[in-house]
Image 1 (cartoon, rainbow, N blue to C red):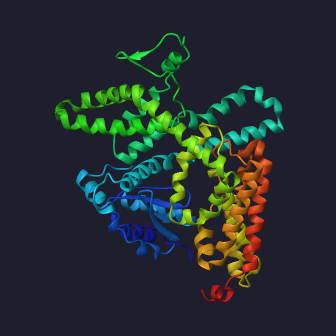
Image 2: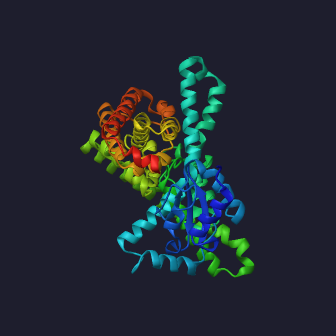
Image 3: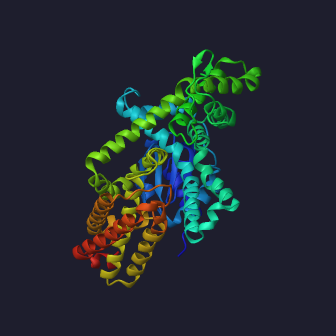
Length: 469
């Protein structure tokens, strides 16, 4: 029987504490993501019992409801019934009360501060990931096209299409400013304007001018560097713009706010960005890359094996959502991702292998059909949460196969130098994103599927319980 999306949406919102507790709603490929004022008002156990829901977790400062194939129908009903569209500002009193409940004691403890920073970064990056994946896949299609038709690379058609493929990455600071403003509740155009100014044509002309002629702002030196594609400078300036906007709204009388708040916010944020925030953000990004590459340099292939093997548990609690900023930073510098995208791909393949083994072993025809469809979803579409909650954690023993397959695939991929060079989906159709390391990627994918399927098939599961369920 078809799922009643309207009823499911209403029950989820009620379980989330009602519409009055929800600030905004968005979604990724498989999850509804609510920003709530008071997490304690949400009843996750009740939400888990709603028809069509696969699971529910609170992670990265969001209430995440896992829907799988039922996502878009439910999301459309949530928006239609309750009018949740863009993120709305949270009232200061409500936000303070919610923060107090989430973090007893001082909000400046390392744990509380870390959670707030991670929540801010994750909520900022999540809305823009689909656009980055779209741009990355378009770059992959163009690369494949030039392999088939080498002369295409010299045509204006290729040049123009490449502009469209590169645009989501080049203008990344503007998209980040938009996402951060949605998260914070500020006026997005102020932060977006400053982000655009960091790599405006006039500024890039100064960057390319005579290096012997220093540039200053109010007598203070300016670092001449293009900040296109920069993630962390945009995160810092967006937070700063929000704080300036709040300050000027408090100071300036209401009759003058429309004239002065926006201009003063942009001016103050831009000056601070050029002098401090942009160089600081660049340094933070470079530091993170140094740490990640240092870990990879020390642990080598073992780092990828451990990450891929542990992903079922990270996905269960929603921690994998924090990978996005690190993937973006690695793709900017050093230009490839040797950890996060390979691990996500190999986990998906291991989930698919486990589902294939379950389909081969079960005697229940209906369950066999379900397992096969989930295997196809994992391997071809890269959507694993239905398999994760419908088979892996439900039957328990296939979890060992997924962990073993992911770790084995990660070890092979790490040993052979598997690197993702552009943003893309975590499915088998995205193998070209590994470019000159595609052979390593193919070997790692095959290992993940085969090992996961073999371990799952060997361990077996309670087929009788499946029939009873």
